[in-house]
Figure 1 (cartoon, rainbow, N blue to C red):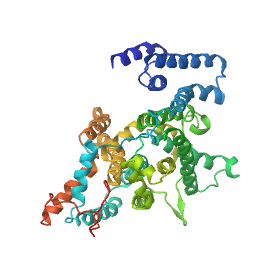
Figure 2 (cartoon, rainbow, N blue to C red):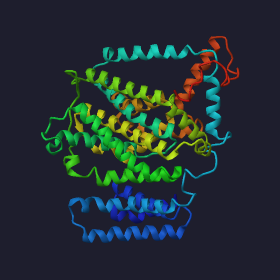
Figure 3 (tube, rainbow, N blue to C red):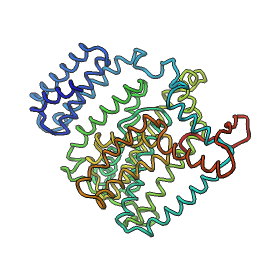
Figure 4 (cartoon, one colour):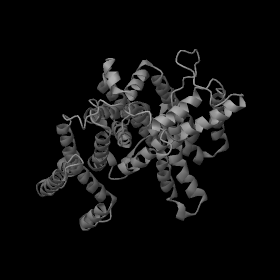
Length: 472
């Protein structure tokens, strides 16, 4: 910590007190650390030194504007990092698919929490609690546009859009076990792609003729393709290196893509409209509320079906043991790459939903620093829990609005602090807040039904249909 603080003071005269400057510092230092494999001090030192020299020399020869001038220099840390990772990927200590150990042991805190959760959820009694939850959910969904005004209904609609982005963590982290810090960047790239095809007449011939709903789908496809390209680099690596590569990619998007005037419209964002379906315009907050809710539940149903499909069983096997999965003939890389790309596409669709309600595609709303908050919230709520991810998406939007509306202005930044404290909670409750709450409600339902929470879980040979995956 002291060394990091000293480095910040040394670079302060050059970058000033700007988040962007320190973000570049982090990217450069992270590239040096990767070059040194986090263990070789001299290799890290000379790698970071070479990166700094190359960056400063390029400034003298590159044009001040254009793609090379604005994109190449901030891309260098990412390129250095990827180059080092690709070179080191031949060694098994940075690769994930060649590891010959279990992903986690039974004594691991996550496994212990998960075992306790499943023991409760597989209890033969108390399953009526989910139907109570469904009834309450329907009543709340129907009551929101009736009880609340357009302002709060619109906020909740945007919360549904953020929930769609958060659901991408279910695929990437919950299913594939990948630590991705670039989901917000995939959302931003989806927004840019959707807005670009709507506002540019060179794409489909006539400006403004692309339907917004089609543009949303295009944004999701573009984000998915980019996600597949990023996944091809980071997925063969271990969790730490995969997280670093996605982190560096998010910084790259911030510096090299969001700053382009054709995407940011000189900082004001590209205009983006509301969708139309079967002649119905979702042009009011309450109408958009129902559109966002339907899209959110469609994606939830797709993810729910995926977990219960043969593909879901494949990922369950991969999470338990990659050696066992490889022995059974599963192509681990292709399976994880597909779900990573699908997660990026879901994030892209969620981002376009946010932009559609706001009527503007504003890339700076999807920067990496905000993405760290998103990831912390998703992990704290439970990346395998769709209910938890929905709670995270709604909390992300509603809590700041509630604080600014009903509390003094000096407490406006308190939600960010609370988000951090919630993320720290994952140390004691690694499966997430929502699964723990589900276990509490199920325990209460079991006791009301006259059962005991200490009853053994049914075996796989039983005819019980209570085999519920964690976090559903």
